[in-house]
Amino acid sequence: MIWHSIQAVVVIFLLIGAGILASWQKWITPKIADAFPKILINLAVPCMAVYQFYTNFDREHLLAAWMPLLVVAVAYPVMYFAGRLFAVIFRVPKTRRGLFTVLFSFSNSVFIGLPVAQSLFGNPGIPYAMFFYLGNTTFFWSLGYFGIRHDADLISGCRSHISVGEILKKLAVPPIITILVMFGVVLLSIPLPDFIVTTAGYMSNLTTPLSLIFMGSVIYEAGLQGLRFEKNIAYVMTGRFLLIPAVMFVLNELAITLLAPFGSAADLLLMRNVFTMQAGLPVMTLTVIISRLYGADVEFATKSFIWTMLVSIITIPANMLLFQYI
Image (cartoon, rainbow, N blue to C red; front, side, top):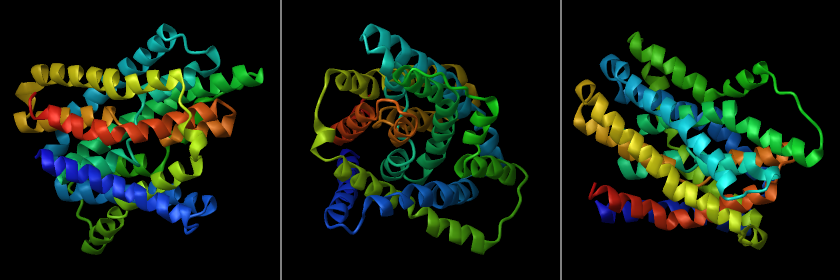
């Protein structure tokens, strides 16, 4: 199992290396790289949701999905406010506390999370990764987004107004809509034509290579500037790789104890492992994009992204080794 985990991580970083090579050769330019997230978010990830839910779930399994969804719904507010607390404890400058909280609390659940779940846990782990993504994205737009906008307001000296409609619009992204639709399809036992399922399967296979090649292009474009280390990045990594996974692990252990009569031991254990692994991944790519868009500390966001990506070379296989003994 450990050797399999190491090989899976090597494959992940070889694909990232392919993205770096393609960018170095100018096969992927920044303009071309901009298309990758659009393809992933609008096509590949929704198709993965269709394929995985339709082929791996039936009505009985989906009715049991309230357990992982409940765990995520409880865990994210706890992790977010832990990030707020540590921003104060670590004396992070007020102009980057909102961004720091997001970097500390939210993980890269699409571009890294889905490939890692597929590589390390196989198809059974993908639905749990989807549930994690659902919580990650929902709480990012309903909590984290406000923090980054507040930082930008402090830096600019202006005050922006964020409406409920704006937040709801941000949540209406194709992956979330597709997951919700597939809940209905599976619960109502609606048959899908074979050509749709087959097409979704082919498209879902794009998720891992495109995600990781895109990550490689981002690392290349950041250059040496993105490797300049600072103290607050160490604090971000403390949250990403130690404190937040620990919080997620403890909450999952509590859930296993309380919910054991409602689910199989194997499913609960898989949920714990997938959720803990997802919670300990690099920072969200979206934090860099949103920071740049609204005028928050994009340099700090980019550096945090680069460093957490590099350190995850060690932490991902280390976590898998740890799971063998707990």
